[in-house]
Image (cartoon, rainbow, N blue to C red; front, side):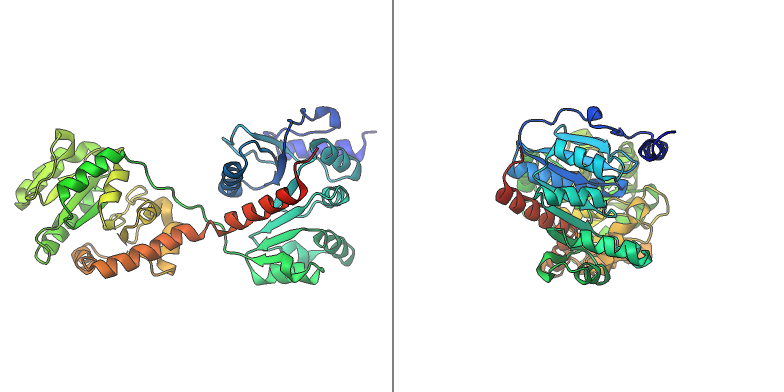
Length: 407
């Protein structure tokens, strides 16, 4: 009859067909020479956190290796210094063989139930284990009294815990973990990295614009062309030197925009024709698809769309936030709903629900103080989600320095 271990391994294979399951010590690949950190990250939603931690730790210690374990889903496109496997069954014999083989310097257990045998063996070897629990810990309240005691016994062994809610913090403290080892942090949200640009191009345009006020309409859909042009005409009555950079979602719409601008009476220049703005240019048609990072760097105010319905009718607002632009947007957020909710919760953007209100929003943000206040708030929203990453990197780095590289 097959052993319980074999049956559990077979079930794990069914649950995680894409994962590499290690059944016996003979299945383990050779451990690389040098220091290694173990990151247990079972959920695909935590890939961004995983990558940020690996990137941050690698900046501090370029020769580090990482053992990444999961529970049924593989994280795609990890750096070359990562080994990735499904964690074997939670049994003392397997856990002992696993931890003895990999000998990590420290461990981070991210949004996962505690695997008792692995926690025990790491503790026996004086390997610090840190827990990151950002989704609460509902299993604690569903345990039987015996299971809850087992959980508390393992929780007390943790070297440090990062949690995002008070109830989970209380769970770990009630388990007996010292208060100074339980830290309350913000929920993780991946920060948007600034879109790239060619610095020489930015310098050229900055010189051409000669400190003129500039606002950007980014990734604009055809239904928004006329409202954007109308908003600019309104704003020009207050600031006659103001220039609009009009960046269409479809790069090949440049000629259509030129036709609309001719009819409006506004003076314009067009990027794909090799034209550059001068002191008389009121609108610059930025009809290229790869230079949005350049336009964000030139504009203090950015309308990112969302007035027209459609899945792709809105730019990622955190791109603008990462480069210090004040943000205006409509109600339709497409794939970026969560980012807009974060901005609105922090009062870090201007929400308009009607195309006729765009001009008023632009006029309001012509005030440098108001635009700077809003841009700073948006930048803080984009940066705040990295708090948990920074805390975890600090914990791992401190533990690594104290314990030194494992054998």
